[in-house]
Length: 417
Image (cartoon, rainbow, N blue to C red; front, side, top):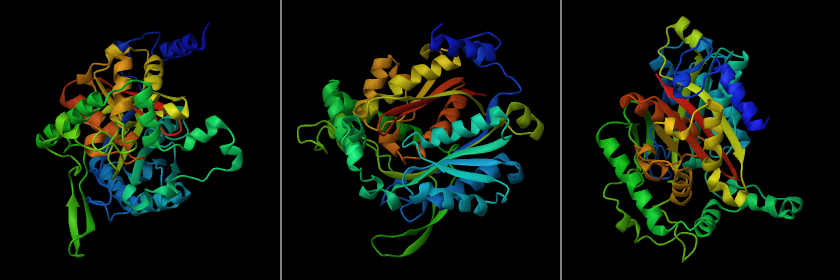
């Protein structure tokens, strides 16, 4: 028996031997469920609403919002896992401090983790697995990034002679834009296709924002902001993604100069925006949620993490999504919405086309090209976006996924309730 078949059998046994969407939507006491999923607005790095707000302060703000909206007793939250990529020391010290500021007691444990662009999803998976194993009953998986404060050359470690001497190892530090440009050439992803995809992302996000479709998932935060023109420090409330631009078309994007190669196809308009933001997801077993009177908004089903060649980092979702679907016992046709991170239009277009996904099912409210990719935040941000949209459209099954720096992919399957 193949390892894939063994995994499928294990999944089937968990659902009483049944597979497919019907089995997935059944409710069991030991389901790991979501009772609150919120994010901050995502704002432009160095320019936007959170440009003067440290990651810790955004995190404390979203923690407070989760407690307030869910009405969970903070004393019941046993562990918090926070994904983040850029802070020194993995952010562990400031994240613990942020939890205390937000009102969690000293008995609530906190950790920081870094799996690059999937850090926020990995944090959720870690908490879900701790709940499944009985290690904890209630936890929060979160993600945060201040690219205004911590993005730059210092985020890349200098390699030793040993690492530089190994060809595949040395590829781990090739800049994302450079390797994505090479991937676009190798996989024949045209600039026209990239620009069309990027323009659609902007247009969907503009429409969603105008219709208020992000409002339910965003927790407004009051912060200090320095006016760059006057140096005046103001108190503002950040409650909307400020990177979303109107009037973007494939034609207007076609006029932007390539960023990494004068004859290349990747530029500032068809790649994810540098941005700031935080998100948090409250998780527990269904039986616990029912006992505590927590409103269940969704269910975590399964996740996958895979490795790919470092220079082909962008194909990660193509490799990870089928594995997650297999673990969940469903096919791509059972999925109503795919939230796939738009690190670069090039890699997202390739993954979507190669997987044969209907474009209307992918990022229906736009993606990172339109409103930003705060690295560690994205994996947890996607959950609030997905569950909100599934509920609004009366749909059930969703997938979140992203490519991951150094050559990985991650994906997870969710059910809306």
